[in-house]
Length: 303
Ligand code: FAD
Image 1: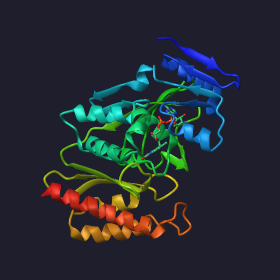
Image 2 (image 1 turned 180 degrees about the vertical axis):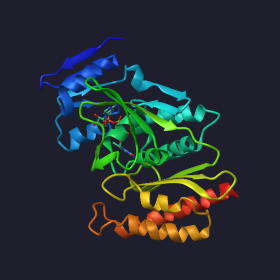
Image 3 (image 1 turned 45 degrees about the horizontal axis):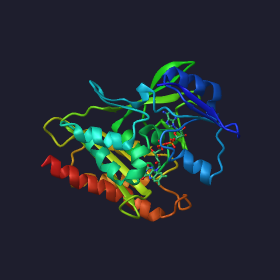
Image 4 (image 1 turned 45 degrees about the vertical axis):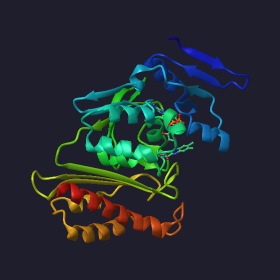
């Protein structure tokens, strides 16, 4: 393995380092002008259709830390450059898949087509922070943790919570930082997790609304101990329905809950009539119907 660097006649640099510190140095030196390119399924669209002109491109395919998949005591650790297909294969090969991992595999079935999944990375999806990402609702509802690193300040851990997405395609990762890995936390036997995507076409389409639901019950009861509900397609970022989730805590899982949650979701996620993307009434009703779908699915598991 060796570090490669090419500069073409338009002064575009293509850099393929073999050590993480080389990539950190590259990012520190070039900041927002430096693009990490893995699958190129976002960057390629920006260059071809939006006339973005990037001068410093780096490919992290040879960097160990960004390409590892590992089961740790805290959960599944996924290198940021690992492709969606690799994640799917790895989880499917595990005999003890947990509820979050199962949801990831199910969602990946609806994520683009296999050509895209074979090259696109999980890191590229998180960093792009599209409001209609298929994976980010799952990662938010799961409370995934991100390990980021910069040459100047070293490593830090960012929790994917309601503060992570800071605006349209913006997040807490700084311009000089690289996303190194993602930790999908372990679950326990009282935890139930489901995720859904509603799109116009069943296969290979952009979502209209995506949702992920994570509920933990008090041991041997139907009382909700912890709740996380995430939606994509309902705001300029992927969002957590914090108020509704906190309202659910301590309540019993029964039909009365549906009314309470429906009213709360209507109040908490009031998509305005001029929201980009259109389909406003449909998208609003989807938050309720996707919750209802989750309710039915989890009720069956609880029986
Ligand atoms: P790249 O284009 O290589 O990079 C994307 C961005 O992330 C760049 O800004 C890059 O600099 C940055 N980046 C990447 N890795 C790092 C890192 N380690 N540290 C810091 N910055 C980093 N998305 C969905 O959610 N659902 C879909 O169904 C879907 N369908 C698609 C269908 C098509 C035809 C296409 C073209 C795209 C689709 N996408 C979809 C969007 C895209 O495929 C995903 O967002 C994908 O995960 C991006 O990964 P990538 O490796 O290709 O990103």
